[in-house]
Length: 439
Image (cartoon, rainbow, N blue to C red):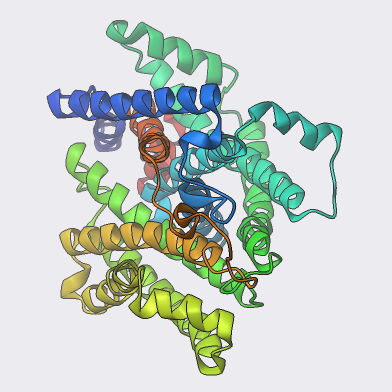
């Protein structure tokens, strides 16, 4: 057996899916329990109606739409890493492309589901097909989300085809159910030159298509807010503000997943310090960009201080939401910049910490985009019940929101159990052109 074959065998063995250990099983069990609690809470909501939530006449969106915007934001990482990096022929990104794509697919799936939860009456979803209104930004959002989801699924599946053939050849009698999945999904793949040519061309076309769709998905989502006449949303800056924030939280989510997969599956030889260094630089750039749009978003209305805007900004800067606001700004942007701007701060552990800060800060930032604005309409509240002047999610809302977040992580976890989280075929091809015969 030659050196190339030995090297190829090692790569395949290193990257094939591994069984869960005790901590992995506990992790899956914990996520499953949270999902079940969320499903029970949704059952109660279906049974009793939206009265089980803390939403009312003014805060009619709340934590559900905060989660929706968060999911849409983090899903954009698929287009950043899979499409932009691939088209730019950035070779070092190969080990993280599949991580980015499964994050994108799971996030956009739960973004769609949380909208249905927010509707209260899920059967009304049929009206979008029966009575579409193209002048409505909500309809635009449905179209771009559906398109983005389909393209993301294809960008996850097509590069997986050569890996499926490898896994079929490596089939294990102990995992018959997984072998059936591999054969169902990839038995038609023979690895011929024609198939490879069609597959590569399709991936390039999809990578080009997903970039404008990715920009549209978050721009249209921002228009849902900007076209609603409320203090804090009456802004022409919202499109760029949302897109830059989405790329930031997406990059933060990827570095968190990179670190966890690297530790759990011992992938230090494939997800190296160089990957963390370069992703750290990307996060710094995006954090600076998003910070600029935040300054722009708040400085102009703060300078003019029109009465409705003044009440909204005062509550953000020094009022009821001040702690959350400054936490989102400092922890979600400023501290990650200070950590990652130095070379020492771009080591794996520090990048992971900064990534967690970005993701957590981003979730609170989405909550702040939704709730404080709804509590400050242009027409002042009068003759209103006291509970309508404040909003704190009910336990059902928290359970459904946490269940959706756990569901997205559960999909990513189970995907990594069934399929290689790092592309085997692309890794082999990048290491040695002679390995083409194996696939």
